[in-house]
Amino acid sequence: MAEQQQDRLNIKLHIYDEEVGVVIDRDDEEYFRLAAKLITERYNAYAKAFKDRQTDHTIALRVLLDIAFTYEKELKNNDTLPYDNVLAKLTKEMEEVLGDSK
Image 1 (cartoon, rainbow, N blue to C red):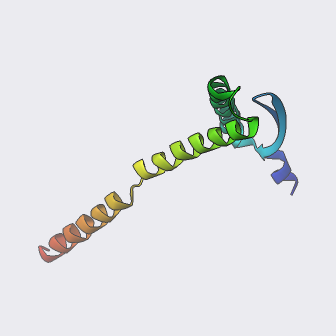
Image 2 (cartoon, helix red, strand yellow):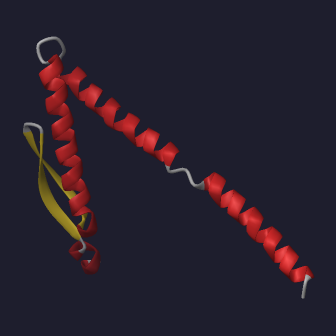
């Protein structure tokens, strides 16, 4: 258990106008800091565009939607399952042909 605690960090992230404390895996620190920076940048952009016309809550929801949309789109673009299936089929066919020629 002591080893697990050594692999954890208690850090504070500056997200938009607030400090947020999180406990994370040591290996994930860079990703959390980049995520906090991304959220802050997107929030600032939406706040600049909508500050006088929408609530902070709605602006935050727009940021969440923007980031989630980007995430979902990237997931679809990085879907390797079709390629994995084709490679498995080709590998099987090659093994069958090579097995017959022996």
